[in-house]
Image 1 (spheres, one colour):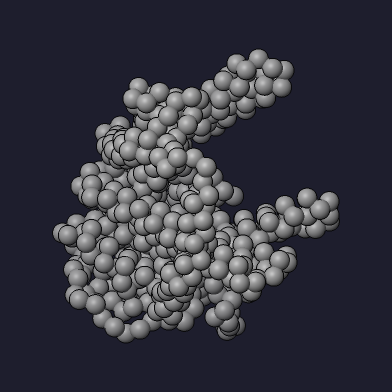
Image 2: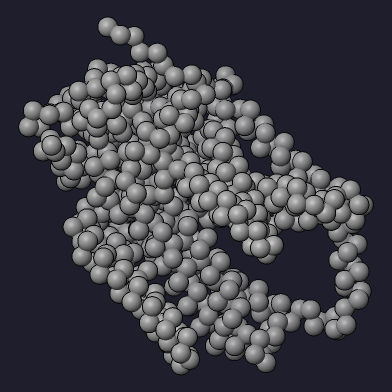
Length: 569
C-alpha cells in the first residue's frame, strides 16, 4: 500500500481552510474553514465543570449510513476515498491525503470528550499578544494624552460661541440640549432591546413570519427607497428611483420564486433554535455585553491612538510620507478589527457552548460555564482567529487607501492593481471569518485549539455530507436581515418619539442614535441564531441521536437532505 505523507503543519491550516470552504455553497453563509496543526497550549487546568455524560444511544444512527447502495454518511475512523463521490474527480494522491486528514480529525475527536471536567488553556501566545497590544495602545494613549488634552483646551478657549452653545444641537431651526439627546439615547436603547427580545420571541412562536420577513424586507426597502427618490421630481432622481424599484422587484421575485422551496426547511431549523432561546433567554444579555464592549473598545482605542499620533506628530517624529500614512492605516485598522473581533467571537463561543450543552444532555447552568470557557481557556483561540481576520482586514484597508490615493493622483495602473488586491483581500477575509465561525464550535464543546477544532470540524462535516444541508438553508438571509429588521424598527420608533418631543432636531438625532444602537442590538439577537444553527449542524454531524429524540422531524429533514447523494450521477 502506498504510504500517504501528510503535509507540513504550516500548510495544513490553508489546506483544510479550503476544504471547509468547499463544504458550504456561496448562498449559505459568509465564507469558509481550516485544519490541523500542532496545538499551542498551557496545561493550566481550570475549575471542574460539568462533564458530558451520554445517554443511552441508538446504535443504528451511529457509523455508516447507506441509501441506494451508496454511502451518505461515512464513519470518519474507517473512511475511504470511495465513500466520497467528490473525491473521485481528484488525483488519487490528493484524495488519499484528504482521507488522511479526515481520519486525523476523527482521532483528535476521540482524544477529547465533549465538555470535559478540566480544560487546558489553548493558544496562549495569542492571548498574551492581545493583552500586550491592549496595554501598548491604551497605556501609550494615557502617557501621551497631555498633548491631546492641551489641544482640546485650546479649541475650547478659542470658541466664539457661548459656553452653552456647544451643548446644543441645531437642525432645521430646531434645537436640542445635551440632556434631551441623552433622553433619546436611552429611548433608543430601550426600543432596541425590546425589538431584539421581540425578534427572539417571534423566532420561536412564529418562525415562518421571521423567515418570510427576512427574505422580503431587503427588496421591499429597496422599492420604498426607489419610490421616495422618484418623489423628488428631477429627471436624475426619477431615473435612479426607477432603477431601484426595478432591482427591488427583481430581488423580490427571486426570493419568492427561486428560494420558495427552501423556506419550509429554514423555518424548521429556525424554530429549533428559537425553542432553545426560549429556554435560555439570558443569552441575549451576552450579546448586549459584547456590543457594549465593542463600543468601549472603539471609543477608547480611538482616543488612545489619536493621543499617540498627535503627540508624535507635534514632536516632529513622524514623516509626512506614503509609507508612514499606510503604516498608520494598517495599525489603526488592526487595533479596531482585532478588539472588535475578540468581543464578537467571545459572544459566539459562549452561544456555541450553550447550544452544545443543550444538544448533548441538557446540562444545568449552561450560560455561566460557557461564558467562563470563552473568557478563559478558549480566549487564546479567540484572539488567534480574530488576529488573522484583523490582519487581512487591515491590509484591505491599506489597499483601499492606495486606491483612493492613486485615483486622486491619476495613476490608473496603481489604482487597478490596488482595486484587484482589495477584492482578493476582501474575499480572503470572508473565507477566514467563515472558517472561524465553524471552528469555534469545537473550541466551545471540547476546549481544543483552533487548529485542532478545524481538523475535527472538517472531518465531521465531510463525513456527514452537511454541505447538502447548507445548500438548502437560508441562514445568511435570516441572520443579516434580522439585524436590519431590528435596526429598522428601532430607528422608526425612536425617530417618531424624537419628533413628537423635540421636533425636527429630535427626529434627526433619534434616527442617528437609534440606527447605531439598533444595529448593535440586532447583531446580538441575530448572532445567537447564527451560532445556534452552526452548533446544531456540527453536533448532529458528530451524533444524530440526541436530535432524533428531541426533534425527530428535523433529524429526518437532515437525513433527507444528505440522501441526495445517493441519487447523484
